Picture 1 (spheres, rainbow, N blue to C red):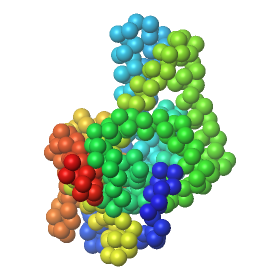
Picture 2 (picture 1 turned 180 degrees about the vertical axis):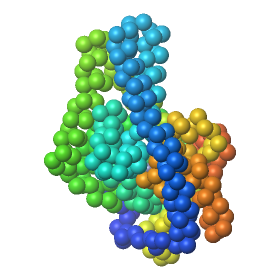
Picture 3 (picture 1 turned 135 degrees about the vertical axis):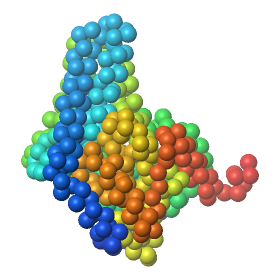
Picture 4 (picture 1 turned 180 degrees about the horizontal axis):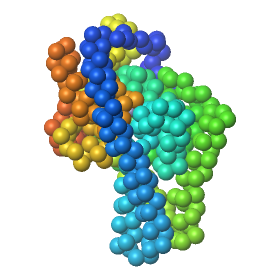
Length: 375
Ligand SMILES: [Zn+2]
């Protein structure tokens, strides 16, 4: 195995192929389609989804304006910054994520336009996100080298097929502050270096042209303008920088941890390209078994996280609005039981966090040479 720009690429890696279809997915799809065939159900789900975009953008814009106008009052400034972070979290989970998956509208163009909220409000390229998240992560979930989310070597070892390093032994402690820098990286060098490299994981990322390039450049410019340039007209540079870092780092931790709780936990399965090619898994089964839900009955978290506590349902039906996931989960769960597919869910946030911590600790320990293991 060798490292290439922080991304592990195995020399022997071939193309990964899954079996498509399967009776489990066919029956689940049939039932989900039947559930969604009811016009009132569909409309209710869509309205609940649409209501979130103005709320998320409204909280963000209002908090930003208030922060500029009344930010000299420390208590008010902290409150406005908190509002700005909450608004951005809602945009990340409830607006751009659904839109970039194509779940908001029928037309791709409108979904991409709303998905551009990631560029303008979060400073992250929606163009690169669609390859990193929709293709690399959703197609090759927890496949080492293909899913960029679990390929963080040589910083951390998230999958058992990755080579051990002595420092991974402490990764369950040091990874948390590193999550805070993930957003900063994507806003600055991450997007650009992925575009120059031309790939994310093993998925091709073509250099954008036309509207895509205009959206990328204007998005970065708009984000830098509202997050840094305009505040500099009101406040000293160190205060602007501090607020920007707090905003981006908290948003980043919340985003990273939410995604990690679904895939980097003890109950989630992992695979290498070689393993997948040797046994040819059914894609839908692979998605369910590499994903873990959490806090399924917590309506507040479900609302704030855009249904990402129902990641199993999200991975099977990413283009369905997340407002339908709690109902779809009943169908998926029943069929998992019927077809012997492993369906994992953590009952609380605490249990999910603990499982992520224990997974990191186990991955850090595995493969450490004996003389280090023995202390
Ligand atoms: Zn997704």
